[in-house]
Structures are given as structure tokens and as C-alpha cells.
Image (tube, rainbow, N blue to C red; front, side, top):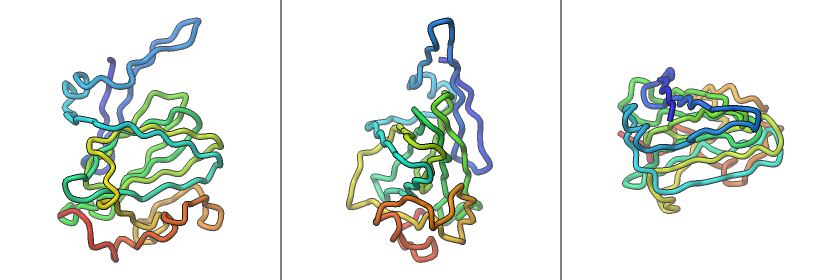
Length: 186
């Protein structure tokens, strides 16, 4: 696996650039190899794969996280379409608390985004029929699931969709603001 890890503007999240090998038939890539990630310094034991499809451009999912022993690290890639993936630092003791990184991911690229535990994650689709696939290192635990309002002005996220046009679930539209969220990381 040919892999390059690129740190982003905040400590923790990283962009993984993975080489694709192409010829007249198309291309091949190893999209995940635990030993290669460990060799690059990223030792995470992923236990569950998640796959979501969004029919419309402007679909927003997030900002999600889990607390306690089920806090999740994620390895995210776009299989089809394009999206922006956002990670917000929700570690109260962090110098970058409340700040975020945004990374575009596309189905025609092998790039992936690593988001460690201690960050809320969300994304917005840029094209219709977008699919996202991600690995997590702890199982989904509904009792530990939390969220922050995607459009919280304090987060200053420059989403590629205005709130009136965003396609949201009822649950995501009702998450509290960051300042009202009691369950964050220390």
C-alpha cells in the first residue's frame, strides 16, 4: 500500500492519500491495510464499517459523535460523488477547541480523512447520488450518541449550502449548539 499521511490545520485529523495503480482496464488500490497505517503511525483497530447514500446535493449529516468508552475514531472516504467532510475539535482542554477542519473528498480520488475520537464529524454532499463509506473503531451505541447543530454560528463552518436549502434529518436539525452541549471531551 502506497500511503501518505498529511496532517491538517488541527492536531488529530489527517488526510490519507493512497496511490491508485492504473492501466488500460481502469485502476486498483488497497483502500485499507492495517499494517500500513500502523507503519505510518496511525494505530487504530477498526471494528465496524458504515455506508451511506445521499440522493440530493446539499444533504448535510452531522455533527455527530459518541461519548465515553464508545467515542469513535473514523476513517472516511467517498465512493461516488463529492462531499465536504468536517471535523470539529470538541476536547475542552484543546487549544483548538471549537475549531474545525474541512476536507473535500471525491469518488474519483482515493483520498481518505481520519477523524480521531474527541471530534464531532459531519459532511455535506456536493453532488447528487453521493456515497460515503467509513470505518469506526467502536460500535455504534445509541445511548452514547450526541450531536451539535451543524449550522452553529460559533463553529464558523463555511458550508457549501445555505440553511434554507440544506437537506437534513429531523434529528440533525435539532441538535444543540456547542455552548449548550454538556457531553464533550476533557
